[in-house]
Length: 270
Image 1 (cartoon, one colour):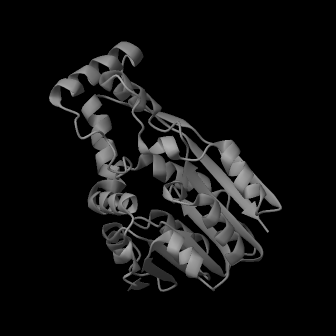
Image 2 (spheres, rainbow, N blue to C red):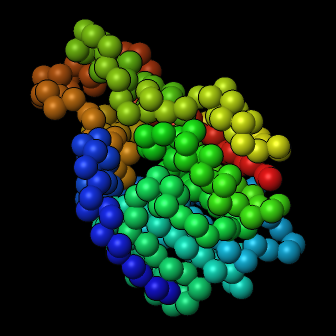
């Protein structure tokens, strides 16, 4: 395994991306223990990958701690794999997990910048629970199409706009105004179909929604913190009193603490 830090992640000046990068980097040490949904979706994504004659060159965008990268390396032992992530803390753990994999190269890179600058082609490009954070998803998908070899395949999982819908509703009630959490800006199925249809002759979008029930409100919020999935956008004015109001709202509305994870499994072929 090779590890490379190009330094470009340090040049990410966009404040939103800086917050996301820092959030995921801080959550690196607790991510694997709490990212059950992401691991479940990784197993689901694996079923979308080519079988038989495997790809020789693979790009993984947003490898995190390397969980899906390890699945790729086991599935395609003869392939050369480039896995990138812009959260340095995540990539450090991926390096430990994949230390014995000589066919894997880890890059500390911003995915959108890498795609725009890359001149190499790949037989398979994949991304698990990553692309929904991109500034210009349509542009990134176009770049992915450009970088795929003839008969190449793109497969990914993206979270959708109904993710954490219960929490957003509760916060809106507590603050008496509409509160938008990061998933509010994630793409819906029709958006994905439109973007993929402009790039790939053959494509599919399949919804994979899950509802996870937590024992307490604090457990739900702790999960968001320890996986970095809040993007740093939970209201800073969530005082003890408002937490109590939010807790009461959940118990009165749902008799518990559910969290929806709306995800889309997408695939595109040239």
